[in-house]
Amino acid sequence: MQHAADEAHTAIEQLTNQYGPPAQASWTEEQQTSWDTAWRIWRDLAGDVQVAVTEHAKEQGTPRHHVEADVKKAARHPDLVAGG
Image (cartoon, rainbow, N blue to C red):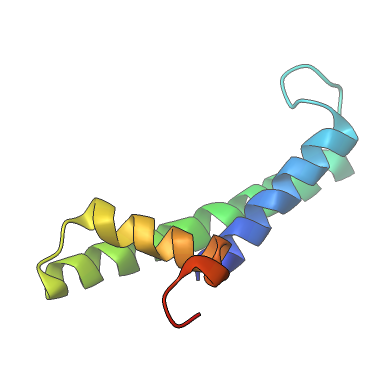
């Protein structure tokens, strides 16, 4: 889930680099729609990750920020995770 959210965020960054910053550039309607769609996808995926992290932390009795850090580490640096 985290990996998908990270990829969606990268897509937003790529569109921003291509079109220019949203507040500073004049985008076409098509560009605005593309960026808005990418942002909604990222927001939904990131929200799903946050819900899953919170639920897992509660189930495990672990501080949420520890679970979140572990998830991000596993998604972004699988070679650093034990057994990965």
